[in-house]
Image (cartoon, rainbow, N blue to C red; front, side, top):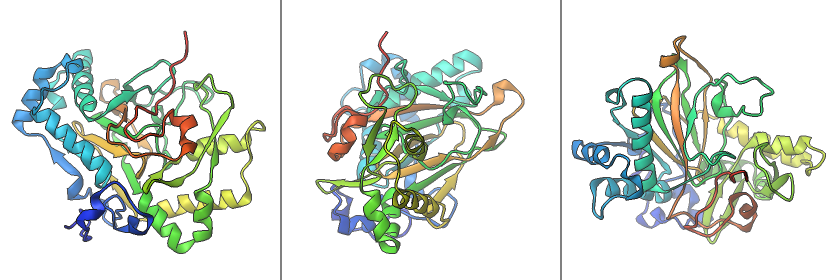
Length: 352
């Protein structure tokens, strides 16, 4: 079997139980020197699938009938995310036919909600319990508590989110910039293992993460979890430098050692290598699914259109997956559960 980058993969390596000695051969340990999207990541809609998706409409709570085209397609995507490359780019949702303004936006939300719920269980992304968020430049002030990376137009650093899978539906793109950049965390693990094994051992130890400003009700202002880990033979990569740095700057949180800082810096420097990164631009109607445990992602800075109705706008969901991998115990404080296939992740809804 040949993966999307031309490397030969053994059938047994497709199982999501990844022994550390086989990690470099797994489909999720991809690398690429070409800035295009690998063919193996791409999926499209058939006319029959789009018809079925549209007919379901607001009946998302009913779910797809057994053997439905949509159900089978989404199950296949879920399997690819967990046992394959960890990346799926589903192209061709006809957002241009949904209409303009509020009507078109609600149609897009409706259909994205239907398809996402067939891949996994949506989890909260905010203290308000939002299951779907708009990703666009809201132009909040620098000191505004509502400001988060996704609602700015600045370049983001490589990171993962607080869920098994993250999905984006592109409604409109920016006038310039805003490209997606992805890097395989198993591939990063392998490079660091070969070049700086001393730093790899540090990255597998717990790092303090400052709790987000809207993440209330915790006994401590931080949690601790590793960047790389294995649990029962299953690899997991998880990384958000901004929250680590915030913990380091907070006197109420543990401080980083010089060795930890060096390890984090080397991790980020390695992720910048062109032969590891894949860079592309989502187009309107594209749905991008990423397995956070094997993929780091970021967005390039962008320049928007002057007209409000043309400005860059994506929809985002966080998903807990029914076929997810087990996690080491250190993730329990941040994800709620570390059991395989459990409902986990997301941001706790603030009590009212």
